[in-house]
Image (cartoon, rainbow, N blue to C red; front, side, top):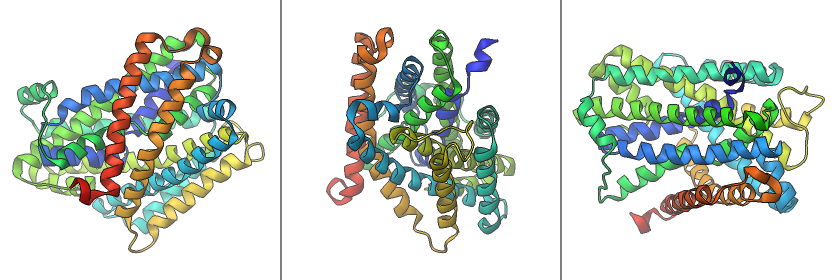
Length: 405
């Protein structure tokens, strides 16, 4: 079937949203507030579908990546500063992914000094020496492993009637922390790197305009799967941790706490999901960054090319993997501060990228018949304005916690 040849970019991009930072956010939501935040999943998934579809449509209609389009339409100077910030933000994210791998390894009794070098080398070999088809198949397989959280959620045996009611019933708790968790749920699902990666991977995959509807199916399905995984992580945490008055602040702590509450198998599945998420994301983030920077600065890129054909592309990937993994191996690494800075920069960059995307995808000169329609534009602009406002609020909350706290 044609659809089987086209699926991949949407599912992979959406799945990586559930990285260790995302899993931690969902875990905190469930352990701190029970089922009352489940309702946020529906509007977040709708927003994710809209933005992913826009990136996919631009890639197919123009045959160019997002960074390439920004450079051609807004100039090299603008592109340079956007790419510089993207490198900084994604480097912080890469370190966070390796931190997730290390945390999961500790649960299984494996020291980070053994696990991190092995994983880093495996990621590097896959990306540098694998073709696009091989890399995509490995990533699709990794996407399937996220269903460990579905099993973990089912094993937690939640009150399903209450879960379904909470899923469609909005709640607003008058607490600053509750608001910030909502903002965090949005921020962990919609990140700047994903728009760049999705559009670039669609271009490298070579999808044509006649395959547009199948690409939309890929994007929609991937976004729905992301929502399902988030749903089960929240209910696993709510049914076990929240119900027993246990509050955790990291996914690794949640995995440990699950053992006496839901059984050792549920705990191991949760930890395995964290390891898979860290490994998967640590491979995607350097690749996404290299795609974006090389497109934006006019350098050759793509995993189907060799090192000699795309030296800057592979050098960026190699550098991010080595530095990201190496930093986590240092003693007393300030991971909280690293995540804080990357979140702030992510919050600054996201609104900029969304505005550029909307301007580009609304251009008849660039998109022709595939430009945003009036209804789509209205809905998407409204969605983006809400995301921008919430992202700004999150950024300000990090920079000025005393003011908002």
